[in-house]
Image (cartoon, rainbow over all chains, first blue to last red; front, side):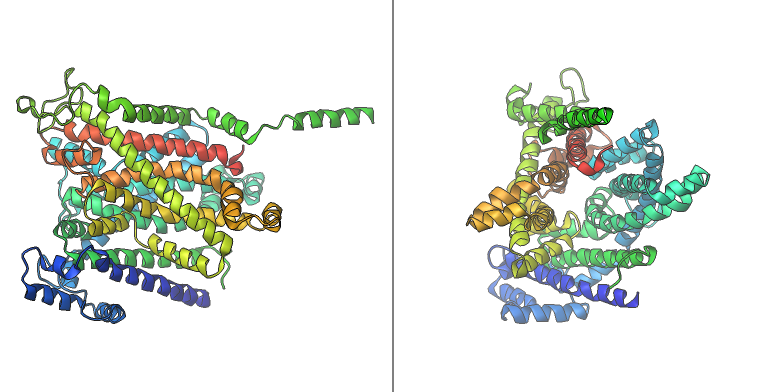
Length: 306
Length: 297
């Protein structure tokens, strides 16, 4: 087990390096002279030179990359062009907001998705199944920004029971996390349904039935555990959609997280900030998937470790 | 003995009734009522996208300050917006943009992704490693983040949204085609083609690619919905279609500040996105169930 863990942890290193190269190249893809772009339209020659040095653009690309990486390892991600604060400071202010939002969203959507999937699968072909699956396909099709705005319209404007903007109180998390989690709950529900249906066909379920075990007991003792194993991997992948979706959802609710910061930075062309945010988002995603994979190995006794 | 022979005869008779793959697909697909409805809705959308802009009751960009923010009525089914434009006409006209963006981006993604997958699967070795590493790296950027990054470089606009969404959908096609190609490349007919001296191009496109068609079609259909969703999200965030374009996401974005005053400005364009994506997703589900032999029974 330990060997597998170490191997899996080491295996993400090349991906992280490639991602950092992509993100490093990012600024170099900007058409024209990045330094000029960074310095702004009415920049003096000195400003451009300063931006160039700030980016290290006066050195060879390979050296630049290693400088960039060295900076990152020391937590230095450069300066925001908008606020003139260190990027790491700006990100630090908002990081936990996004983490909190995604965690609340994944929590409720996993519970709701699993329940819906199991109910659908054990009532296959009946109205509960159709209702659940119609809800699920709607859930993956609904645009988050529309759902969010409609929820604001109903709960904040019309009935005035929930705040429309995000803040520190827990109440303000309800609408954003619901909006963000709907799609994920739907995907998990669909996946759980099909994996439960697969497990229900297994011999050990037939044996349990033949033993005269109660159906509820079979579902909870045998089916739930075994289908959970395959559902875990989907949850990991769904985290990516949550992180991406948080950008849209945060923007609708004016939630002070990384997503809002990214949108603001794109409209301001704050490239050091955009670059670092993209890096942070993908690092989070990679690490979450690693954790999920390790968890998978713990839960699933059949996995080939090696 | 005679009875036994008769039974054998009957069996053969039944075996001969095997349907062609296409007929089999049609039979299974027709059994799914919801997919048929979804297919009908997609067809309606395509027709609207073609003739819609020329049959709408009002000019989609004509502003009329006497009728701003009117609630839905018989004259203006979906009401009017802040410029007094008819939202119904704009939603109908917008179908062309959304379908165009969805279809072109996924088509580009499928085209380049499939070629990369073919090359990767057939040649293997270092080319395979490079292509797969790069596509794994693209997977490491969660969801819409990659698209936003591309827009940040290229600048806002619908053409750039198409590029961003295409890049975003490419790795999955590459993966699907690669795994199919790996499974097929050692089959006898490929070996035969190689032995009679068929060119690589011929083997790749004539013999290997068709083996992935059913998977490509299913994934293609399922991705269109998602691409329309991504593209309209980008427009909503101000990175895609710009006003006064009747793009659905951009229309929603224009209405978000009036949510308390005129809900219809955001409701109808959003409903249009929702139903369109829903139709493509249900169609994709139907195609998958009809084309996937594992789901029999």
